[in-house]
Image (cartoon, rainbow, N blue to C red; front, side, top):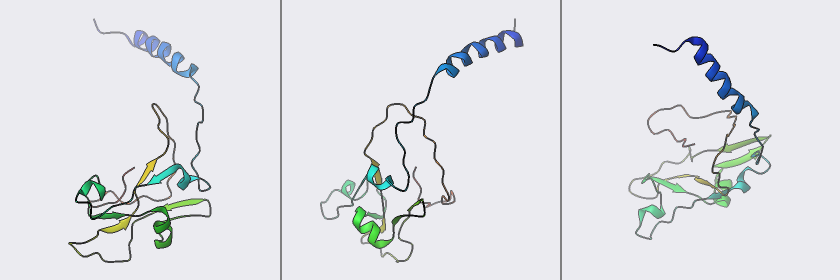
Length: 133
């Protein structure tokens, strides 16, 4: 015999009561005042003979330090906004050092989390798109 809507509804309400009783606590806030302090910048190291020192995903890239990224305009935090982007001005020659970009690795480790984020702009989801969130 198929379960009735009343039985399903009762079970759903019982489970919802437990979920509603749980409280979320804000542990961290990432904004333009502290965003870059919350991450380590992975730096590509050419010349070691191990391509994992350049990029763990084998991309044609040149990950830059925080200082380099700021000088090159790859990162900024102005007007309450955080900007991250690849070098969109220079042409790279293959073989050689790949396009300059940033790879951020969180300093914090979370076992379970609910993350809420607002993005002003993300690249279109096309082949070769840069975003890896």
